[in-house]
Length: 250
Image (cartoon, rainbow, N blue to C red):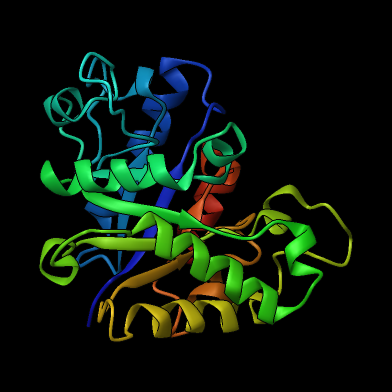
């Protein structure tokens, strides 16, 4: 049975090397005490905490982005020096800063070339969600079509593509009625993504994970669905007490 994925995205919430070391240690302890582990834990720190100075990073290390600039700290060459295996591409925060689907497409092609595992984020804003599921599906399909555009032999090249469905309305908690606590709000879209990627054009058996305000109270509910292959956790993964609760509840 394929293990489900627990991916932590620290964003900019970690403020010191000490905090980073504590979080790394929690992951190492979890991986070392539960054998075999029922989940694959992937940790994605900010760039400044990627180097292994003063602490031992987890075995499955990811970066929050990848750069098309060879001189950047997030260049593939530098990331591989830091033992990074995974890269998050197309995160909603980057899209909000102006990262286009065209740029995302180039980053995916670069990650494929450099044999880095891809965590591609897609998700709709609140105004699209309010138009109904048909509009959401059209929006998500548009993102996937543009992000995966003109990748020849896609099936043979992307062996480790992970799609993270992160509805922006759930991350930003824009309304009291639109929350991430009910997996039913997202399960139909996750099923749609799976079906879309298995069409004639793609035929990809891709892992789909959920990322929208995951915490210790709702993680079990999301992981209980066979269609959901894991979760992408943001702020909650950087709070030591909360992260301990999450590890106990998975």
